[in-house]
Amino acid sequence: MSRTAVVTGAAGFIGSHLSERLLSEGWTVRGIDSFTDYYSPARKRLQIETARRARGFTLVEADLNDCDLDRLLDGADVVFHLAAQAGVRRSWGREFHLYVDANIRATQRLLEALRTRPARLVFSSSSSVYGETTELPMREGHRLRPVSPYGATKLAGEHLCELYRANFGLSYAALRYFTVYGPRQRPDMAFSTFITAALDGRPIEVYGDGRQTRDFTYVDDAVEANLLAAGYGGAERIFNIGGGSRVSILDVLDRIASLTGTALDIRFLDRAKGDVIDTWADTSLARVELGFSPRVGFEAGLARETAWYEKRRGGREEGSEA
Ligand code: NAD
Image 1: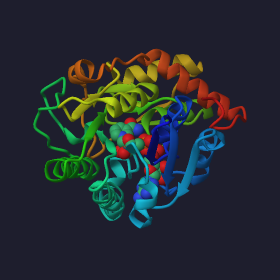
Image 2: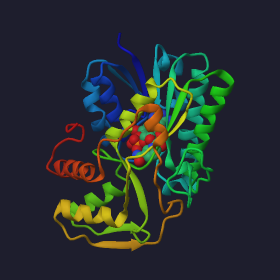
Image 3: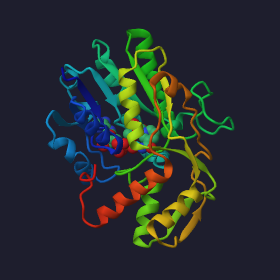
Image 4: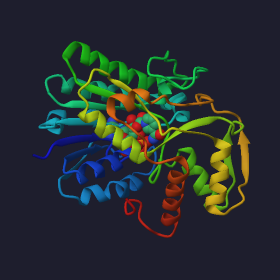
């Protein structure tokens, strides 16, 4: 019998890939998205187009803070909660309320609606909950000291999930993704801005000296982690999800120069507040408990993302490559 999934943030970067994967495995998928204008809603419509055309998919265009959640969750076996206001830099200042609304209020509203339901929740968390640390690789048990308002709201989301588990028996897993990339990557993220600037022959702006490192996770591996977490029945709840490729921004730029065949015009800017220097995931727990094993290495993944951007410039639609 087909299982029913609710995917929040279904039209987003990771949510659209997850929706397609679930549909390809025979799930019935109800996707919800409010098409926020953090980046182009038209781009999100293209991202969700392949899923929208598939049998078994329904799109609910609504805000989680303002929709009938009982109807949305009716019959759901698993809720994949990806809807969020992402982005570290914009989380300072006047727009913080967007982060509170999307990452805290909407999560709390969803959790309330799940109180009386048997559905399992898979919550998309972030490596941003760790903050700056010299203890590398980062382990789930490390002290959490987010250094951005965004990270603080994602940590609040994790805490809320745990409260609903402890008090109402919610079954959940929280996945702390480490920088996810691949086709459809959000346009505000580093690879996207670097690749598009390289292809357009524009200067590339780098925050900091470029020696900062990230553990990069290919989007298909993040999607796989969601499926594994949905089916997991063990006692652990919080998992690092990293691709195992810890690379500096300077190395990323080198690769992009060779993939695009261009000489990059790089401008170094001050380090952005809220950006940590290094991230590196210890994924032992996900490996042992979930059977998680990232499949796409950094070079192959970056080549795929670059090819996707090249295809878009050639007039192909965003949703058409998957
Ligand atoms: P995204 O912005 O592409 O997708 C999020 C989607 O949520 C958007 O389409 C947006 O319109 C929707 N949304 C926002 N608020 C909503 C609301 N109130 N109701 C309904 N829909 C709403 O972002 P993404 O990169 O795909 O990230 C997905 C999840 O993964 C987020 O929870 C994010 O915090 C987390 N995450 C992402 C990364 C990454 O590298 N991309 C890393 C760590 C964590």
